[in-house]
Image (cartoon, rainbow, N blue to C red):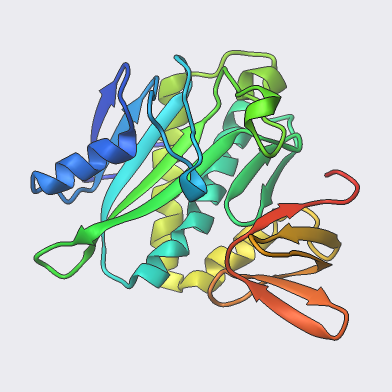
Length: 251
């Protein structure tokens, strides 16, 4: 039976501007977590690289606010733990769907994007630990139209044929992220990397990586110790820390 993480508070809104911004406001007011902030609608959400991530009524927008005793570089690796947790929400609510992970932090449902993840460092507390906001948007019922996304999007309802339960999605997300954060704290990133790669789409196959100034093509060989994508190209191996991945022949 899935249980709520011990010692972690929860606040739920019907609508909010941004759960990450609410986390920022609470940090400024002296809160350090652990705390989950969840909403059924988000009106001013943000995704990776400043992209919009709007949440329609009935979807799940959530941010976990946690004190993190590590460096910003170590905190960034939690994006992989978060995508693992999102994949497990998909498994619980759409058990017959094909679920995979796409670098750097996309969880795919039948080859389509149904989650968005945004980690933000909200500063250092008096105890020296970071105040980390881990934001996740899950498409429970609605998905953005194709013209608003770089990758085809879907919802859990569209892929499963039934309306997912908001409370169950939130409970599963919080419990599984707690599990993976504990795994990383006790076993390091290696344990997270192994679990992530076991779900990685097109591992060992040719991929295209689009960077701001160039587009690269090569074999997806895995992740390095920092979570960078390892791309094998003719005559060289590149370690890529940021970019957009595409596949020549679909997913």
